[in-house]
Image (cartoon, rainbow over the protein chains, first blue to last red):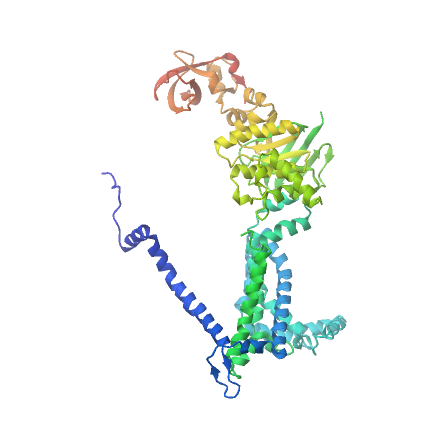
Length: 312
Length: 328
């Protein structure tokens, strides 16, 4: 007996597969509805609520939010005490991003180009492992490391290099009794905590640059530095941008690290935390929270203008 | 004549793998030289040894008489057309072609003018502003060619440049490449696994097998007088006859090669066989006969009668067509 040209359906799975084959949109709808609901309602919805709040203002006498549209709250952002917070946070985020990029690139390049087998596994483990332990434990550990009596101070004393730390701590703007109470400490801990978020997208981007591109550039007479500038960096730029979005926006929004490490100067995240909590000024907290969103939009627009996504 | 490239007992071993093993080679200046062989035979590694992307583990390589063992790729005056073209996706065609001049410090307008000149040479004048992704495979290939030639290299290396093109385009590009090489008088070193391509384009060629050169010579020498059974089988798709069969056919007891197109079917002969398979080729039919346990192919020109599968037939050939290759 010959086999039939059409095989009988074996059950529900076969019939469903058939249904999806005849109506591809049904499958698409089934797949997309839950995440779109989540994204649309929970993410974008709350973002819209936030945006709305930022256009309200608080009544100075009663402390009650008046539901009238006004730009008064945004005007308050420009008050020197508030504006300082914005500038401080943006400078910190920019410095952290640049330092993370500089630290991450050699590691990501090695992992993408040379690491194979066990070394690759070791790379992923080494980058991911710090992410598995508690954020707070790591930050407090750093507080001890950076403290005057900590390992860095101890090592500096033993090698008679304490003058380097003292010199750094006497630079205006970076003052502190030790690294753990100086903005330098805040910067170092931010770099440590966010570095994996820079390495991973960079490594993924570098991995997609074919070896033949590098060979072609050398073949045409480019030195290593020229190949890096004209071929590797432009092709890896989307990954660098992706990584910098992580480090930049995570630093813009963090409110724990500057509370524990550093000179207790206010950052955007801390301001939001205090305003919505003890101060009860939700509109100003919302206005503060809108700033990182605007900064990221401007940053992305600039990156796009510079051709960062041309290679995508 | 000077030799453009010279290999002296060159080896490239990757641990236990002998990708290239004791190769001696001389490529004459201005010649179109093909490196032919199956994949893994060492031909591409040889090309990469010339460009400098591989370092020899033994022996010496000279380019125009100069030892290049300490010269990095970017200082060798040779350029490569890569198998996947390796065009830079973030640059337009003009900047791709001008890349070599850019990294050597040539000014913008001057290098763009030179790039346009080269694009005209490969008939892509109007394409300077496009991105590589907007081009067809054949056009990308021409850009890769222009990008290499604009640097005026002493030797142009081509790594299976036609492999990704369809048959019609490939044949057109073969003619074009050959014409270009004649016009420029440049030394071309061409890697391919396609025997027809190698035979039709090269002035001389080296047949690679397992990291060594099996034979080196002109296409005619290689086709008519293969040195080994491997060459006979790989290059000519020739019949390789074992010593017993050669003797039964009236020759000495040696291995021999016999080209299918020199073999014809006959009513009677010293050896008879069974028709095993027929393959229609358009210009004729390839008839495979099994005789004394060996498969022998004969080419029956179009218009002549073709036997049926399973029929018994004898075959004949011109005595001069039998090429002897020794007893082992």
